[in-house]
Length: 162
Image (cartoon, rainbow, N blue to C red; front, top):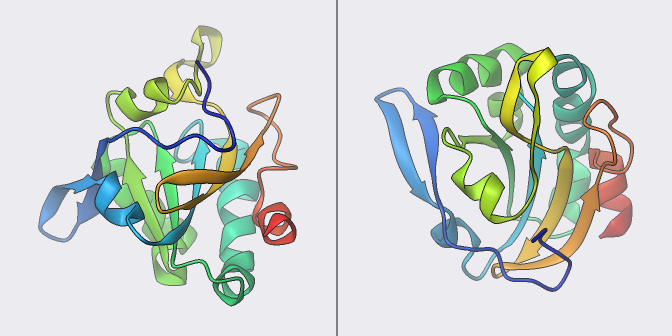
C-alpha cells in the first residue's frame, strides 16, 4: 500500500554517511516533535536526481526554513559511501540537506514507493517524491508519475505547499 497524506510513517532505520563511516539513524528520532521534509529519488548520480531534484532543494532551503521546516532529508536506495560522495559533489551536505540511504529498500518498500526498471539497471529503487512530515505524520505528499520527471516533487513545489 502506498503511503498517503494523513498516514504516519513506519519506523525505519536508515544509514547516514559520516566521516567515521556508516551510521544507523532511527527515522522516528528524526521526526519526533519536528517538521521535516523528506524527498526520495531513484538514485545518486542519476540524471534528473543530480541535475534537478537535489538542486531544487538546495535552492529552496532558506524558504523551507522560513516555513518552519527543521530538517530536509534526501532518501535514496544506495549505499552510504555513494551517498556521502554524492552529497559532497552536489553540495547538498554543505547546503544543510541530510543524506540518508535505504540500502535494502526496506523503508521505501514499506511506504509503497518502490519500483524497478531492469533495462536501466534500477532494481528496487525509490519513486520520485517529496513529503512534509510533522511529528511522524505525512501532511503533504507530492508523488511524480514518472521517475524521470521532477515537477511536483521539487523544492519550489514543497515551499508552495507549505
